[in-house]
Amino acid sequence: MAASRVALEPLLERGIFLLCLADPGYPALLRETSSPPPLLYGCGGDPGALALPGIAVVGSRNASRGGVEHATRFAAALAGSGFAIVSGLALGIDSAAHLGALKTGITVAVVGTGIDRVYPRQNLGLSRDIVAAGGVVVTEFPPGTPPLAGNFPRRNRIISGLSLGVLVVEAAPRSGSLITARQALEQGREVFAIPGSINNPLARGCHQLIREGAALVETAEDIVGQLGGMLAFKYVEAGTAGRGLTGQR
Image 1 (cartoon, one colour):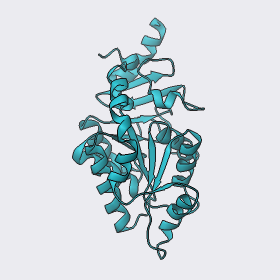
Image 2 (cartoon, helix red, strand yellow; image 1 turned 120 degrees about the vertical axis):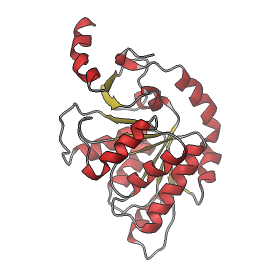
Image 3 (cartoon, helix red, strand yellow; image 1 turned 120 degrees about the horizontal axis):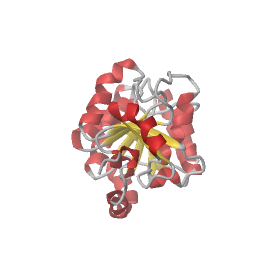
């Protein structure tokens, strides 16, 4: 343990916390998945935010104006209802979801780089706002890891794994958002999708998910009605969570 503490000191000095799979503070929802990351690197004032009941809000990087508005509104309402909003800090829907959540509650960003890198760079300010508001930026990749293309599909299982359900706002039929949705189903999570115009190519992924059994939602209340009963139970779990190898209490 002493050797582990020595190895951790440089991380702690940079404000980075580390959770291992056996740590009592490791997110219970993520631990129960088939391939939880052995280590989670994070940045934020409270690692316990990872144990809060989460809903992932995901979608296209090239979102329409309507998609951005939907993501912002749904995320704000869900965060205000007590859910932590989980997304990937990408442009488009992810950014809108984080921004919406910051208006009313907590948000968690799961990134495909080392915790000391921000990608895209345009979201450096957003990542700082997330941490300042009590949220967390988290990754399985060690510090210094660049934004390699293969990292982003891999991190999607963490986005869904931290969440009780996944809301897809806009997505093309072949996209990372649909990968996240299918991983959510494999993990036993709920999948929700917002329908759109038949003339919007970014609605086709959502329509495909709905045909495959995803719940069609028109308001955040549709999601709260289905998952809201789990809030109290998950908050009890979150309240008993540890604080990881930082030694913070």
